[in-house]
Amino acid sequence: MRIYGLVQDSIVDGPGFRFSCFVQGCPHRCPGCHNPDSHDPSGGKEMTVEEVAGELLKNPLTDGLTLSGGEPFAQAEECLALARIARASGRTVWSYSGWSFEYLKNQGTEAQKALLAELDVLVDGPFLLEQRTLALPWRGSRNQRVVDVPASLAAGEAVLLPD
View 1: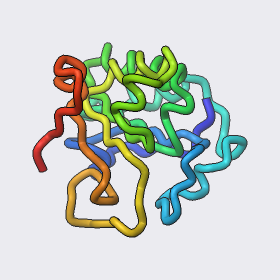
View 2 (view 1 turned 90 degrees about the vertical axis):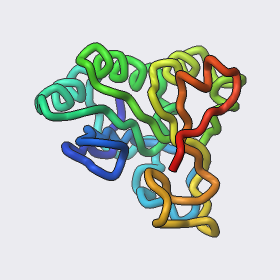
View 3 (view 1 turned 120 degrees about the horizontal axis):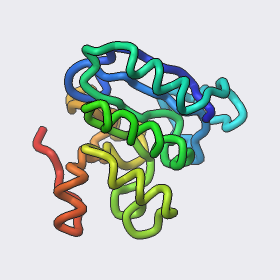
């Protein structure tokens, strides 16, 4: 998988201590993105899922995995494999995506739908510079939603976590 960067003990990418995996490559290329160097799909470095998982599992205090980027759903197969390893180790799984929950659920590829089903939380929607905020937890612009994925899949529509 193409990796932009890995961060141990993040406290800004979800609750608790998160292992944040920033994938390389993003088709959205949102103006004002906080990781513009992650847009080029040929940038970053190549790592195997096993290598990334080894870094994740290295710290027993890690509460969960957060997939960010870049666009994790552009590398859905690899992110799915990593999410399954995280879940098997008792960790929660969050992901950010420029695509909406509804798009991924209804129009995503089979791998994207499978990755969505492995998530506890999806922070969805593109970053919109004109809606930028530092006041909302876990997201960078007001249009983005913090979606409870299991509840949403059960309900057939997006169920949001409270702020």
